[in-house]
Image (tube, rainbow, N blue to C red):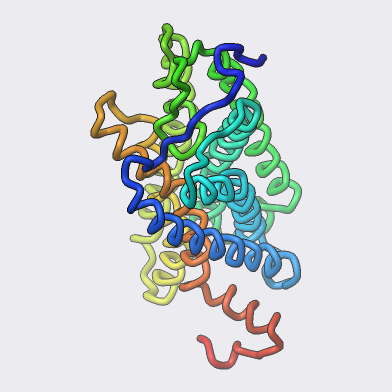
Length: 312
C-alpha cells in the first residue's frame, strides 16, 4: 500500500552535514564495492567449477556470497550517487523496494549463518556421520528455509513500516531506507511498529545468535577433548572464519536495530549501518580465503597452476 503522506519520496541525509567526509566515503565505498563484486563472484565460481569444493561448507558459503552480492548491489550504486553530488533523493517506490530487499537479505543471512554454524558443529563434533548427516538434499532444504524465512519476515514487516504517517520534511537520517530510520521519520504513533521490530529482533537476531553460541559451545568442548595438536588446529581452522563473520555481522546489526533512543546512538548506528551494508560483504570473501588453503588451491587450479605441492 502506497503511503500518500510522502508521494514524492524521501531525502537520504547520510553524512550531508559533513560534505568533506562524503568524498572520502565515496572512495572507500567504491573500493569496497569493487572488492565485494570480485571476491564474492570468485567464491561462487570456485564453488561451482571446482569439484573438490562441492561440499556443504562451500555450498552455504556460495549462498552467502550470492546474498552479499545482492545486498550491496541493492544500495551501494545509489549510495555512491548520493555521496558524490547534491542529489540525495529516493522515490517512495525505490525506498519500498530497498526496505523489502534489506529485510529479506538481512534475515536470510541471520538464518544462513545459523545453518553454517550447525554444519561446523556436525563437522567437528560428529565427523564420522558428517557425510550422511549433511547430505546434498538437506543442505538445499536448509538453504531454502533460510530464504523463505527472510521472505516471510520482509513481507510481514515492510507494509506496516511503509504505512507510517511520515513527517512532511521526508528527511531520512541514514544512507538507506531501513526500519529504524523510517520509524524515526514518523510523526504519528509508532508503538505497534516498535513492538513489531522488537519481536522480530528477538526471533531474527537473538534466537539465531543463541543457537550459534550453543553450537560453538559444543564445538569448544569437543576441541578441548582433542589430544592431537594437528587435529586441534584443523578444528579451529574449520570454525575460525565463520566465527569471525558471525562476530562482525551480529555486532553491527545489533548496533543498528537494538540501539537506544539517543542522538549519539543514532549517529553510531549510522556508521554501523554503513559498515553492515558495505564493509561486511567486502570482508567476508577475504576472511574465508586468506586462511583457507582449499580455496587457495582451487584458485590455483582455476588459473592452471598446481599449488598443492607448495601448500601444506
